[in-house]
Image (cartoon, rainbow, N blue to C red):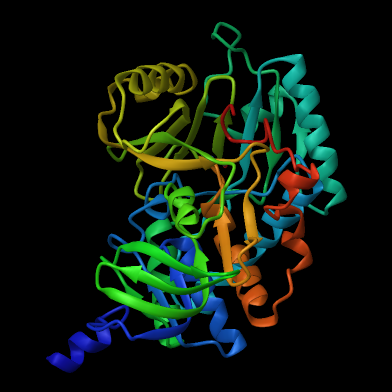
Length: 403
Ligand code: PYC
């Protein structure tokens, strides 16, 4: 029986923290776990992943599972495309069903201005080899035949950016699969281990203080969402980030009738139907900064009003759950990834509403940085330094929702 339980356990329970590790990763979400998973490819296995709560308890378990790469800048599109491509093979690689459903992604346009911005995005995407095109209202109706596309809505649909490689993937499965992969590679996963301080000597972090004792570390990675500024403060590193909540909710399961992801930044909604039949829906970030992960009545009212304009069939569907997560917003809406001024302290931060879809490529590139000491070309544009050299990568207006 014990053998059976041991075999069924996804990752080993680690009762003790060692006194030192080659690499300490803070945050057992999709980015931290993916980094540990890819580090093993470089033969780096003396790794601890620490989380103040259970694994996937932050943004990894609170997002709405959307994958896409139809970004506005060449740097962004190239980067997220590499991530979607890794996601394609990740389930087979991890030998874990991630329920990736490549069903296409529609960003609706309700104005001439939105059409012009989307035409521009489609051009940038296609120059990067990404399938993304502007389509008219008739084609929108063909792709989403159950969506109401009549003229008598608040925001009539004038067209859309269609991105066939986009889709959804089961977020919990991504966390579990990566955790198992990281564990098999030798990394130790320590949930419920809060980091309380970082000891810095000169340009290096020498140790990580936790609620379970202090551990020495060769390299430290901050892979937290929401708490990234607080952890960077402990290292004496300032991040230009503000933290906001993003809310989402899910209906009871209903008959399958939507097999494409629908997004409208003007109506502040993104909608998909899960394999279980639930409608998974989210809205824009709240404009105030907070760490209080609570839903608001305004969110539910606005989201349901707009969703019902597009899908009046849901009028009698009941909401099962609503939740909120934390989003770290950077000044240009692009992530802050890689080195900081502290030699052995790197970050994956500032993801806004984009983080989950980037997990595999973040893991691969951060692991390469740790192993080689060199910043991979793909992430060079996202260096923290860009805010000092004024080389911003503006993804403003490339979100699923208004930013
Ligand atoms: O950028 O695709 C996105 C997204 C979906 C939900 C929040 N952001």
